[in-house]
Image 1 (cartoon, rainbow, N blue to C red):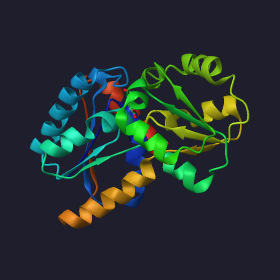
Image 2: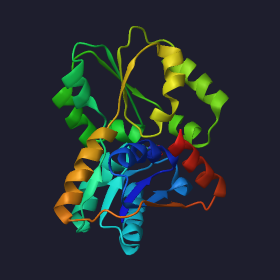
Image 3: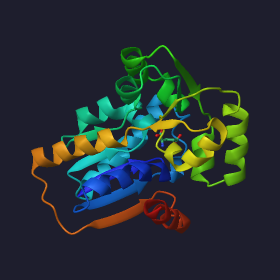
Image 4: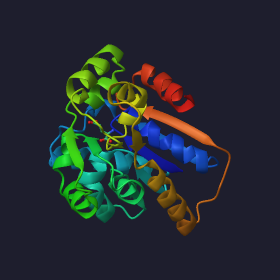
Length: 241
Ligand code: DGL
């Protein structure tokens, strides 16, 4: 079994990519909407929350865990990797992709406060900075996406991104953001998006081979910490889109 978790529905954008390449495995997706948003939480709170989720996933038979959340990855991955003896795969904002594919392009990096303030992000940024990047902290945006507040999302984007001109690359540094690509394009025009999900797939494939996890019939189990049945419906809707 492969465990995947996020603060809610955002990790679906990663899970979709995983299913494209690795369809024949058993998956347990844990949506922690009870603790959403992660982006404004302290390091201590997040470590406590994610440690409990990983324990739960391990106790339910997961042999590898994917942190499908940039915030939790940036803040907790080193700690979690130290205390669990199964592979823990973590997403990161796709700054390297911009560096490799369009270094000259004016770039907007969007992420949560937690991700942008983390040591991991700062290291990544200094390694792959193209000197044409604007970093923007999207406080509250993941929460609006989680709650599917369509009108408020439009207003938010208008207010916060409306002033940016000539952006070519947009790094979606939060797994919730790929769910609103069209809405972002409506404001910024024909930009190219970059996110970390393809990197996750490659890493997961490698780890699966390393630990010898066998292919099986596809099974997807969804769990949500707030026990809200609407979350499950939304999860499958997002997965099918
Ligand atoms: N989807 C998460 C991320 O990638 C967390 C968003 C949040 O809960 O603030 O950062």
